[in-house]
Length: 519
Image 1 (cartoon, rainbow, N blue to C red):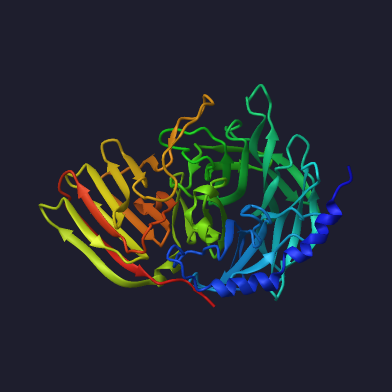
Image 2 (cartoon, rainbow, N blue to C red):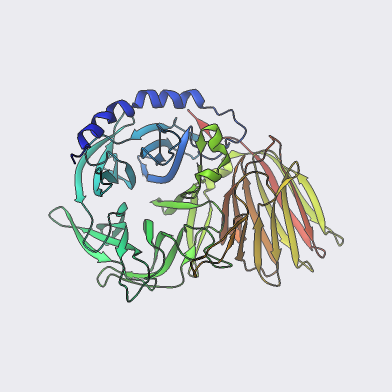
């Protein structure tokens, strides 16, 4: 049967029209729906996902992300393209625009994820091209591109074509890193597994390439870890260096769920240790999740002026039918920029300092009472809440966010050192029990997340509560939980706190958060 590649290519020019897409964006911003966020980057329409191409060039931060600018019959994940915005301060942004989209035989079925970097004063990108034939056989290629003055990315030379032997065509997401002045990149890969080591047909892996002195790339091989049988695919690799320690971020898919960890069907986490590019082996500790919430995936990290800055996707693959805003024609958001640090083998993340510039009205909380067990405060519709509890005799603490009867609860038990987040009190969104019958996974309550959180005398929370996007930082960023809520009514929330015994003191602040601005 003849392939229809030529027919497919012929339709691309009419399907992806930058001027029309950009004009539509300008029509819908500023947003009017009460579910659209104030200080998070949202999809202007259709679906956004993985952050891509993060880089600072000439003092400007560039943020790209996956985007479907032309949804067809609500096939949200089709037409993979890149949306672009830029900022100098994470407060004022350029208007989002279509920047990279399918145009030729290499990427006709999607411009998948990749990284950004500065070269000769220009922003360059390195991304995965995806192409399929009529038998749905996938061919991948890795390609350079350059950001142009009109906001589009011109496509340059192909650097790698196809996938290595022993790995499937799920081979994507190139991400640069540097060692001793030399450039490398990591690739997300899916290994054809060894039946003696795994019952899965495939396993996730990270592959590294090194730049040759005379040009081109040399495959160094797969990074060997102690996690051979840990999910069927590892997406979105990032390799970072904190002093003498290396951190390898990846996103394993299909890891069996456990009671206090791995509760999302797709994870985002890291290994901390020492990476040898000579032996292609990483000596590391336990896999750490970067976020313990319901909706965090595919983070990308870049370095600028001594900071590792991370942006993640507030979403989860394959759950679009659970996202209420889809009825209004848009899905998902990006996280605020977070700064990563490494302390005693653990990766901490905190909001970038620039986010403080969004604070507006302030309400201080300062309570010192011998009879304090509970209190309640009204919150702005978009707010930052900072709370510090000196526990005293209190052992069980409940914190409730409520929107006219709908609620999300945070319950902490000092005896067990377990934090429980429950959003089953919301009328809309994902909830209920997902049952598993594969002998590996435990059943998961889709509305509950539980994880260990060490607290001695003081419990600290920094909560960023937007219209639908929530980011909560525990113990100064030791743990984070990101998730989505969809209140039925356009009302401001309240926060209430109850404990089993008296606190010693409670102090903190509530700020109304100004919106980010698109110029």
